[in-house]
Image 1 (cartoon, rainbow, N blue to C red):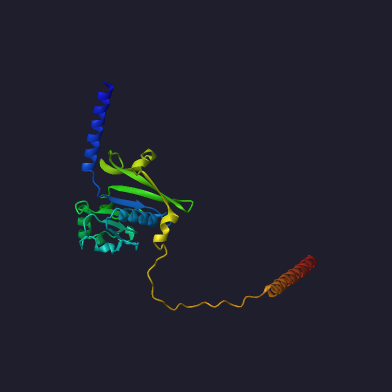
Image 2: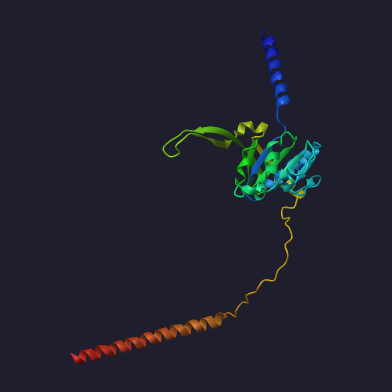
Length: 264
């Protein structure tokens, strides 16, 4: 009897696993936040090489061996093969929430249909200041931090929709995003990801910058400041002058007092 129950439970579990794998969405839009030096580009490189080993084409805004280097502004305007992985670094510099006019309809349409293109997209940014239309479409978000200068830890953020009830301040009920870190107990399914920075940093140049044109700048010459001997001489001279003037002032004051006393 116990064996039969165990067998039934096993079949039920296998059925749910098959259904989960069959209907899961492997083409996600993932956003990663982190300050400068937190390990975002290192995590991008690690992700790139992971997908390259799986045989998937990778398009990256960071030049990485084996990946296609591309301009993020081409998104939505040019075709990218299906099953591709797209990695966009510093996305906040491309689609800023303040520059809402810069978020063209081609970008919006692409990210709305990103799953249908069979693309997995990772967006990396230093802040949360990304176009809201883009944030609302994300499937997962991570906050990444650097620890001890050689480890970066990315923690998944759960985004839930909650109802904010009306009060005297708001006037009406509305929906709002409630965000909190995923439990560390789910580390086995990606709630936390740890990256050993020295292993991956050799694959990219973190100090790669675009060349700027040279320009002549005005130089402010350094004046001939007095040396220590001259400063001491100058200080002693000022002190002597101050003492001399104080003594003269006392003499004048005493003379005035004598004149006043004689007048009485």
